[in-house]
Length: 503
Image 1 (cartoon, helix red, strand yellow):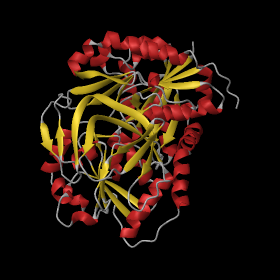
Image 2 (cartoon, one colour):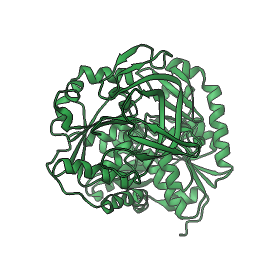
Image 3 (tube, one colour):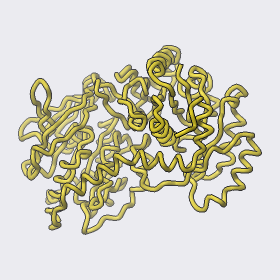
Image 4 (cartoon, helix red, strand yellow):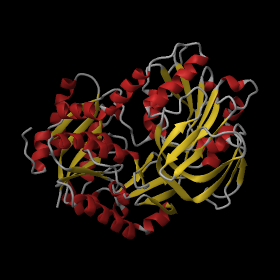
């Protein structure tokens, strides 16, 4: 059986996903066959595999770090919140149902069987399994219903690294409190502690390391400095908060993204935000749309409710103002549905009912219970863009959208032929698509940016600029792994995994 290392945390958003990805790349560099595993993920940021299965984006990044193709076994259960107490449950890449918390916990025995089988398939082909936990490692009220932390650790016979976030404060309480709440068999598995997101002179925390080691009896395996502009896709949309007040400029293409309450797949815009002549700002107030060159309505897990939010908070008025045509308005997936004329939910996918859209595109949508998931290649049909600037993206949606007139904005090329996607206005300045990852391809991204630059009277920039951005993003995992290796005691980790410390 594969050796196993679990990366658990003192809380959510302490950096478990990134630490796991960094360790995966470091093991890959040493020639180790390694794969990531997170039994249960709760995220609206998902991806579609080659086979058409849906899984959490964090495990996709970790798979890339480990040099393996993403597979739903790496994230057998994905919870996609639809409200405060209900989530869509995706099992093995397919929608399994919608559950409130109580009903979901009733299904734990069946679901843990799925977790066990998925892990066994992956572990059979690996030397090391990297297990990521969820939330805190010491949630006492969830012990009897846990699917993702200690039951998986015990099943895999894993050693554990505990990650804490010093940037949020209270790191001593985080670490000592978490360890004190663990049962003796759990604590015995903990190899050591990683203090993440340290800012400032690291020598000033030497006494802190000594205190943690004295109080816990465990080694601090590393103090990892805060790293700006990691440029690795994150699991949670909390990372976009730092970009919400990014200033717009006359010399940049200014993109305002409406910060929907149930926004999904926010990583669609990561490559765009990395461009030096683009500013991406996530806005929660309609007045923050001022000076935007482009307004984007992103994906949504609950389109009807988010459409209501757009109306009630003044966004719709700005989007539909007479004379607002100088703005470019883009709808991605759920955003496409909102830009249309009508959304109907006869199958109770989002609770039923109908809603008038923003009427900026001549499309009508009916929500269906069967989710459409696929990786696709597409040719852009937007004015001023070459059809050769192909896009490689993926579809994840539960609606069927019919264009009543006008033209599509993409042509999807498949082995069986071609089909049309989305819709656009006559001038191409309002458009919507079901394609996620539409801005990832550098040729399309640069052509689209240059089109917006031309509207501002700015000279075009070469596609090589965007190709350089794409290369920088592709190398982000290696830069992060270098950072982890510099600050974490890999020798102790390798010895715990019974691996050679050479190389």
